[in-house]
Image (tube, rainbow, N blue to C red; front, side, top):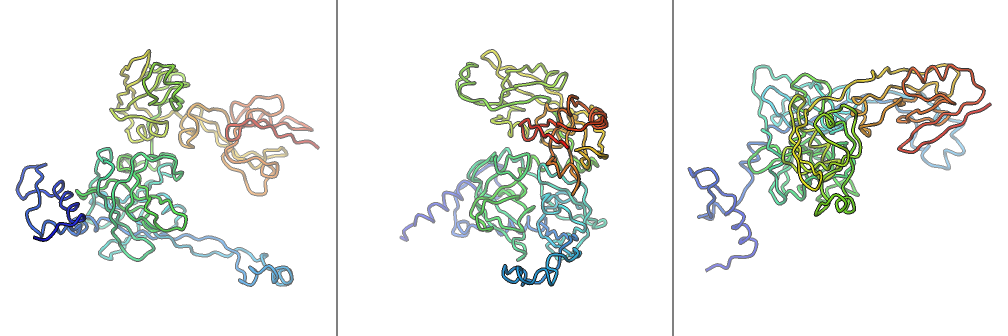
Length: 476
């Protein structure tokens, strides 16, 4: 009798948990009964799923100064740059191409990909696995989730597409396949497992709650499919951890729960994603906080402030409450809370479990969009004053949500600074929140405009930058 080696033994154990008997009832697992069954192959799964994964090509025009490579040499640049005018040429338009992947999610041609794949694109072309090429229309672009939705028109033909799997049903150790077009070598399939769930701190989007996988993901895979063994989409491949640009076995995908929410907004005809607004500021529950609240262990997020008459306050929530779950899903951090809210739909309600008075209580949160009050009043500042060239706006809850700021901040924020403007010369930056001009406190854009119209020899501008209060003094 042939000895069964350790790899074969592992494969038999794996198949015993995954192979379905022909004509058996759902969920009936059997041990493989033939050598054919032991020869595990992903080919049928790939054949089914691969046609729904597309290649995406983008084009945009950028301006570059043409110069000789000789000017990269410090010696040549030092002695001949002035004579030959290196670096003084006019910027010339140049076509820049980019490559990524996407996934068909509807039979009529709606495609999900990454925001960073199509960002700034003037032309978007989609190539199907059968070599057909279509011009794509951008329906929705959401930088905060790093997702975008495209549409191609194939007439009355029904295109192959992938169904979404509930990403909350994934477990660490589940087998997954990554399908995309790495390095533009053509459609490629790699296999691996789910290495971790709910990864945060990756830094590629505001809604960080990624699926981590060791299936090889490389440049060009962005926007491609991460599928499970039932052929459904578990996530959209988005980022890798790499020191060289190649795969090191740590890749990240946006969960299908977020993909579903973004797709629903596109189907509703929205150009931007509308998300439910909590109307509260939260913080992580530390061990000390947990002990002071009578909790056995630190978990959940604590409410540290409430927006007056916001959804959280109307639900009965109070400062000091700890949010434990949303619709049964544990909330371990403010990022997890943002993700859970971001995957819910406006107009519905969510069930919250909270910790209060050393016990749990249930609350119902009505899911509404953040209000546009006060109106943004976007204004370009002009004239002889230190903020000339800055574009400012009133911070409403809607704008705060859009910019990904602390949910309870208000006042006037700088949205843009014009190049070579007075505001840039004096050191003001995008994102600064103007608090006071000389002795005038600033609450609205109208207050700021009025304060800047007052004649002054010296200026004192107080602002908040990255959470810290700073004052810029400008004199004659």
